[in-house]
Length: 92
Length: 112
Picture (cartoon, rainbow over the protein chains, first blue to last red):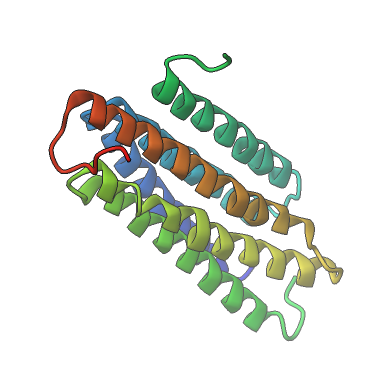
């Protein structure tokens, strides 16, 4: 791997870590429950992008499945939480 | 790994990865910076579109040229998020609108 790509991937990881910190700050500070669900949604997307970047850095294709699973479970959980905020129960 | 012609592949991968990560950073910063919830809903979709597409295209370019075989199944992530992110946003916004009406906030449109 060329030094350019290595440095760029480290920079991308730093940007994603900072983005996760921003989402975490909104998750802690968010005044209402819907702000916290939105911040959680953003946080899992950032984490998924970190895993994609690690797969690029370590040249392993098995990180792809982990990223896809995080995307799937994050969608299910955040839509379940939105449904709970809307109706007060998840399965009626 | 230092085959001739692989430098521009690395440069393209680096540009796509840094662009995607910067898009994710801008989207998350917007989540922190906007004032009301209905403004805050907008910036995270930048993470789900530009950020995910940038990093996935970087993975596809790099893996396709390293193994000299098309590596297309990484596209599943942005295609799935293109379906999932609007659904989550719509559900969450409807929940927030419902709760704002229940609280009697000013500035939300009345139910029809």
